Image (cartoon, rainbow, N blue to C red; front, side):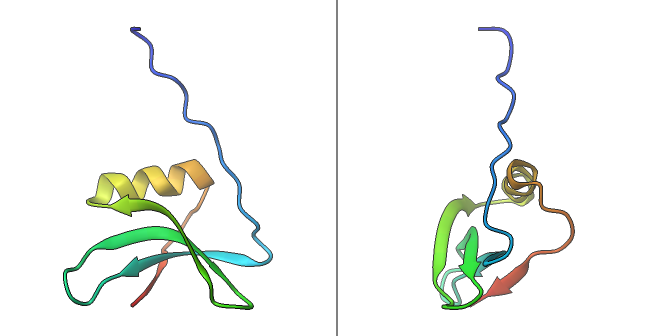
Amino acid sequence: MFFKKKAEKKTYDKENKKPVIKASICNGEQVAGFQDIHTGAFEEVMLIRDSEDLYKFKEEYGISGDIDKIY
């Protein structure tokens, strides 16, 4: 009740997928997820409302550095 549960480290297929942020041109909505390198298919993971959400996404999956944006 008083203690926060530790965030579990999640994994993704680093050989076939890359982390990206899909941004809408119309309303600016951003969704973090993974794009298949071979097919270009996008898998949504979470909605990004602010920099704190982006930080959480990067922490959960152990991502360092910048993430590409796709439109």
